[in-house]
Image 1 (tube, rainbow, N blue to C red):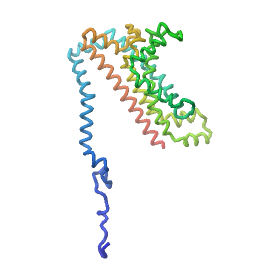
Image 2: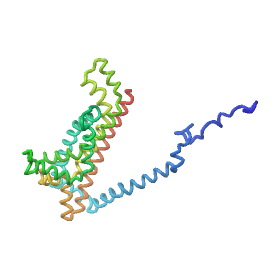
Image 3: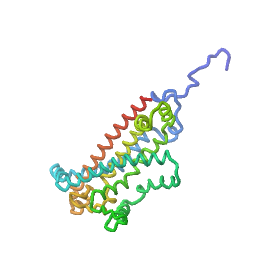
Image 4: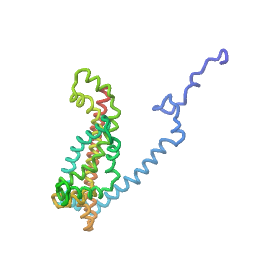
Length: 294
């Protein structure tokens, strides 16, 4: 350093990028992969082509016959019966999967047993298996020639079992990473203070798991109300009994009523969106409360 010249602190500072990144040098990712605006634009364009345009197309088709035709399609006796079957069975399936999905995730993360990796891989099988194959499996197990003498074909119970099969991974895979990241020392500290297992689970573990549980439940419910392949054989599409909305949509298409089919689809999409939005909003608030509690 030259004598008599005061050091310039500004020279040693990295270039500022804006209010949010004050005092921070641009990351290598930001420099090497274009601007944030470009990345956001590309992501938005892809989302529009893959998701928004198809949704706009189905909306346009549903509105093709006018409001009266739309309302008539979604309030007909057959449509209302399919909504009732679909929603009631889907709610029941989601509640069951919340309990047993959490149990399976707990076993996979907290317990050690022979074949654990195999069980962990089997959880993802419904994701990879074609849904019509799942329906064949259910028909072979619970159909007229059931090897376990349990006949569930053409019943709501059969639909429920098929939906449990295809939706279980959503809850397990949502909860499992959170369980792995939970701080076991907090549980041990609670135990050292005299808390029993039930208190530790309800006061320490469950609040931390709630956002992921709600997210998994929302995904499972949304998959259940739109499921077709896994229930087409075991359910049998008995009107008012086992005919779910996706099967009613197929019937409308076969009868060349594409406007009515699009209207039913819009209702299912709206239900899925509202459920996912509400559950994720509740989960976000629960997560914020958990952070503040820490």
